[in-house]
Length: 344
Image (cartoon, rainbow, N blue to C red):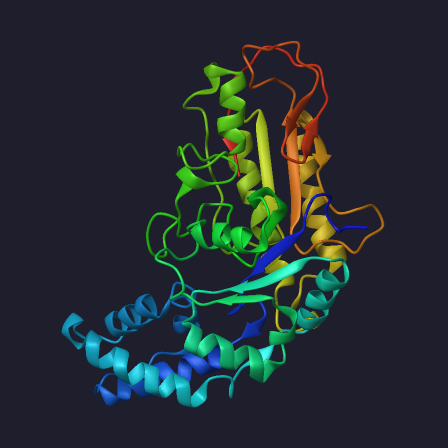
């Protein structure tokens, strides 16, 4: 049985998803900066720069170290040499990552590794870590004219696999706040899967808007990249203050994606935080847990919740009893709208 009905393939990110490569980045960048007579940067600061491609990484490191834009070409050449020398030497496969790939393959999913890392670094790293065997396709950040988070790489993989994009999943990339989709290292709420209003995004908000034009302009996004379940209650309070009628919550990746199980948020603590957040919404809301994982299967690393409050956001359909949004279904009698908001 497929993990998710209709899902046939997935693209999987590399750095920070399958392999902790921060050690390689730190040594290669600091060796490069030293060659340019610039001070080193600590690993946590470098971690914030990783994931948007080598060009962004080098420009960010130069700026953070007090370098000049004119030093970029020299930095680029030096970085290529130094990273090639350390590639994979100071990296570790995350605990459970390889087993996760095995499960996906065992369930019949076709896999492609799609990363913003240059291919010349990607292929050797996959070989050194033993992960190359799980992927039919491997694309680096220099494979296409557009890089993630643009959907172009996913569309190209779907084409190569002979599949519709709707049969594909993307693993390891941030979506709640449309992060990085309209500029380097910035949130882009207009492209959020939940509250986005950009023409390129078929978000919950745009789908609801087609059903109820009165919703226009009442979308709000309180998502913060990197949030953990600790931050959920604060965002719930914002939703309550906004008198939200429809709330989506995507939380849990930052609780689970740690180097060791000891560093993860415990199941009991995570559950208590989710329960407390839903309880805070309960006076004015009924809640539904939406998951595409089959009952009894291991819990997904990212928890997807939808909360449907006591009043409707669909002014044109006050008596509507069934709304289907992707894999989320809501069945509840609806009254006239108060202040319809969409949040993520």
